[in-house]
Amino acid sequence: MAIKYELTKDLETGNATIDREHRELFQAVNTLMDACGKGQGRAAIEPALKFLLDYVNRHFAHEEQLQTQSGYPNYAGHKQFHEGYKRKLQDIAAQIPAAGPGVADLNNLNMHIGKLVSHIKIEDKKLGAFLKK
Ligand SMILES: [Fe+2]
Image 1 (tube, rainbow, N blue to C red):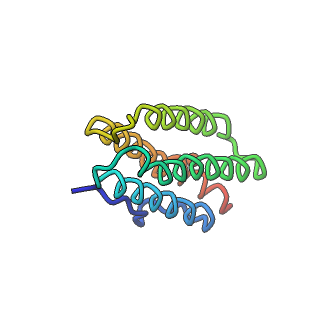
Image 2: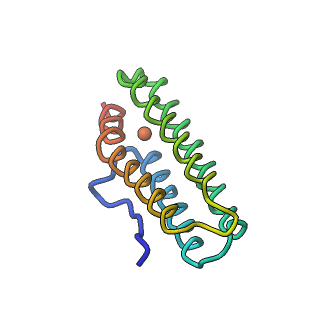
Image 3: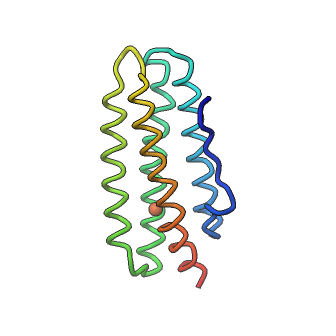
């Protein structure tokens, strides 16, 4: 029933570091979703939730570093997306009640992960192509 996120070929950027981190990011999402699927309270999913939030922050910072180092022309726009994304992810996480995530929480989370998948497919692939030059 739960969606499994996977870094399929069409999501690869061609940059080995970014692709590895995207794979780990999807793994962190899957771990969180598995934890959510067990119908436990918030405390039980807290470690997986915290890991995902931390990992997203680390990964975005890493991508931004690659952009500033390489003089990536769309750094500002890309960073703006990252900032908004992190904020919204934190909001969604903060809304999960102590009793554990309900259907609406899981929908919000899945929708937000979907936005990341689209971002990878378009913006991160552009970055990967630029870094290859
Ligand atoms: Fe990105």
